[in-house]
Amino acid sequence: MSRFLVFLVLTASPLIAQTAGTPHLAFPTDGNWVNQQTELQNHARKILKSELSRRLGPTCDMRTLSKIDFGNCFIADAAITQRNYRAFAQALKGSLAVPVPNFDPEVYPAAKTFTAAEVAWRSYMEKTCDALGITEHSGTETGMDVTACQRSLTRQHMKDLGNIFLGPYDIYQ
Image (cartoon, rainbow, N blue to C red; front, side):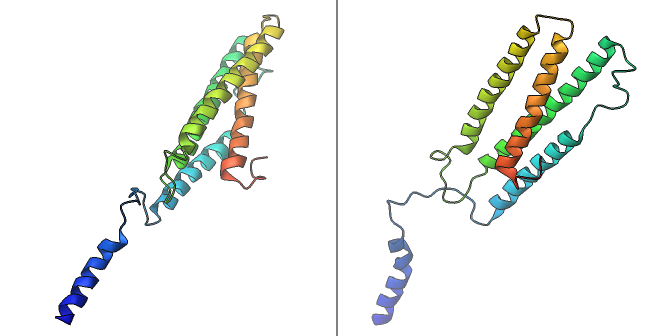
């Protein structure tokens, strides 16, 4: 009888250890979340380094092109910056959305908070650059000035986000 009692206690002990007050959260526990975060952060680093190393190409030379042609070239380059920014921000948001053990995404909504911050930043950038356009009294180069402002602020913001989320802080200077 004592063997049966020992067997019963041993088989029931895992059930005793589980309490109803501890909710089961479906977070990965095998370390895969670290690999997912690292992969997304490395992707963001690659985009950032690519963007910050870009320069206007020799075919986009203000000295050899008309103002209209240079403006078109500059606008096309600024569109590349905006595309890179969106991909960079998406990679950062993705890295923040990876479920981390012991962190409930409903309690610590990093990706949602990041998204809200980026919406606010885009509003700031647009309003700041629009103000520049208004102060230029709608001259012939106003569109170029606004585009240059948006490109400059976007690249600086990407550097700032890189420093904040990707570190170390001196890489993106």
